[in-house]
Image 1 (cartoon, one colour):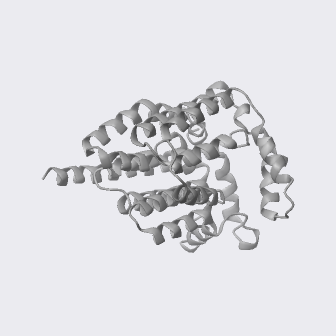
Image 2 (cartoon, rainbow, N blue to C red; image 1 turned 30 degrees about the horizontal axis):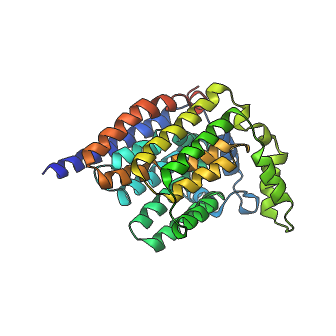
Image 3 (tube, one colour; image 1 turned 120 degrees about the vertical axis):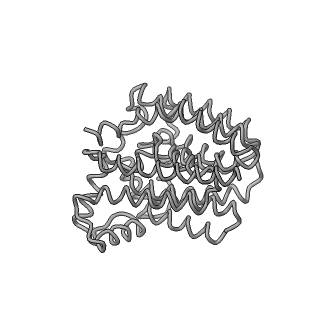
Length: 333
């Protein structure tokens, strides 16, 4: 009888968390920086002028088909995000931890950026989570399809898919030893710029092939105003939440895993491109994996232990960082 009661309570909290999120969406009276761009694109919706992926274009088309007015566009996008998040926890997350996973997907430092600013990466992250969870259930065809959907929302999902494939077919590495080394380097890079990204760009620029995609990425990250948006343009307190999230993620993942090439490779990817503009968005690909951590922790511990540990961790780390987000004053002013 106890598992049934726990499952009912879990579903109840899924409902409560969803209602709180909907209330936040309708209560806010401001917009994130990128939300204005997405709204303007919605007003001028035409495929030949659409500069984002096919998946995002189809989502715009669905909202137009449903007759969503411009004034409700942003709220509608957030409701769509909630719907996809609910599909993820209902279909792919095991019972009794659905509400906990939904909490990490909706109310965290990186999630609020997805929901009220970085729409495309937000949707892509949810499909990546579903792809990984489905692969862990041996639903491989479903997993590959979901990765393709993620790529249709945000191009850098392709890199995560490549990392995922590499992690499957490569020899397993010692997780904790390499992770400690990576964390030391990352913390040092937060304190001092070593010029790694410039060397990578110089190497890519020297390759003798012509690619409009490479050129577009190069123009965006090196020639535009985005070059002034690296972590080194942030204050100490602007960088501090990112450092705390990296170290806390590393700690809790090291408790769970002895080997996990996928997370190690994402850490290495984040390290190599930490100096690039908007590098904190690369770190989000790491932080979105908390539902994976929760699910894997549950596999070798009891439901009670999993819920207790990740709830305490959420209260001590995630809640303070959530209200530290720069998105909060934008959407609530």
